[in-house]
Length: 254
Image 1 (cartoon, helix red, strand yellow):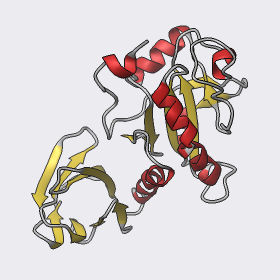
Image 2 (cartoon, one colour; image 1 turned 135 degrees about the vertical axis):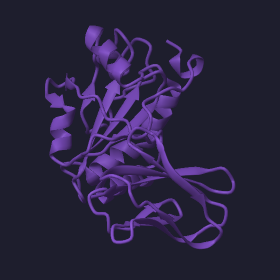
Image 3 (cartoon, rainbow, N blue to C red; image 1 turned 180 degrees about the vertical axis):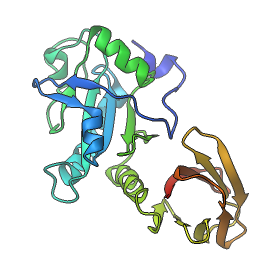
């Protein structure tokens, strides 16, 4: 399989609603995605392949492992994160996962404390189709409301920013930090406000279907965007700075 280099990087789009699944991990424990979401957990899914060098490189950096150790259900801090690691190569087993034999980069299970899955057959096909796993490594963050964000292979700190965004969606008064952008939604005035925004930052607001609701461009200093008349629900903000770099945030309107 050469998915990482021969197929266009397609995946679920930000704001998609996560397809549910029930899977058994390699230790025989059963996990249902929406059970975790209904408990208010933020779920990260890491799709990887045992033969994949870039997957192995990211694994060795231990960003997802450290996220789970710090913020997982037995973590030292917030305990609001679940991590699920899913190996996508067909026909692999414990030998490949442990680096004993087969087409594998090494012992993937060493240093992993979160659940690992190795689906096969029809179960694997349905899972990869539903989650549009056309390349790897592919990392998703799923908020308790079921909304999906493609995080990619980020550091532990950047991954936890997604947790902050998920949590912020239940409190419209919260300031949300996205890289160097600080914004909040004011329910009193129905405005999206940016504090000390950089000149030339383009702001777009999309609903969960991806439809553009409104947009504007900052001119330096504070900036506000009127959102009067929008329906209750979750919205995504895309900020694109003058250099073309984009960041995504999220807010909730009651």
